[in-house]
Image 1 (tube, each protein chain N blue to C red):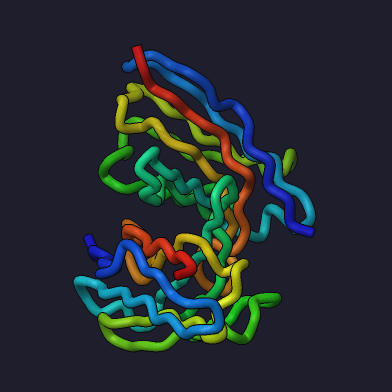
Image 2 (cartoon, rainbow over the protein chains, first blue to last red):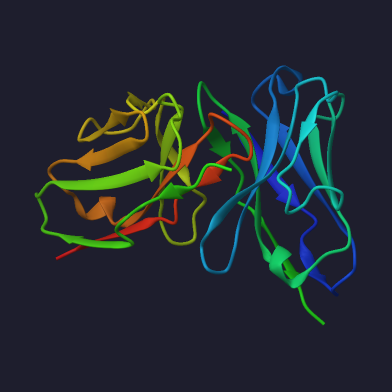
Length: 117
Length: 107
């Protein structure tokens, strides 16, 4: 079974940095693009980043471009999200996701990031 | 950016009844549309992709339809376990965007 387990969330001050990790198992990790999706306290869902299977292509919305970096280690079956210059509006549950034949088919349980002074 | 609008943020339906949740895209998305179900405390669950294709394990009382900019999720014979919030999402172009959600409750 596909399993995605996020870690690394926590409380951080505005302007600070945090690195999230996602351990993947149950599928050939190196064959799939991977993404991060977040859910705000108001329950709005927002796509945050996507990385190609090989890691050579990355995609971001304007809201995080230049501040967040998605990366992966296919040897370790692990996805990362480096977040810097964090703002209060980045407060959210962050989910690691994998595509299926369309849409985000698999989700982790999420890791909570709170940006507050 | 393509905006996704779910016109109803809240719906109340009787057990055994039928409900239709609508989603409108601000531009054509060529059926590159997904529907998700989210129950409190859980991650979203993909129900339908490609506007109409039911994911494995999803009950057949769920169905999707639509084309162009307008899409619907229908649930027939509503069960208590269907109480959840439902989101649509387009994956035609980046940034991938979600609707604001429709919270379904039993009347």
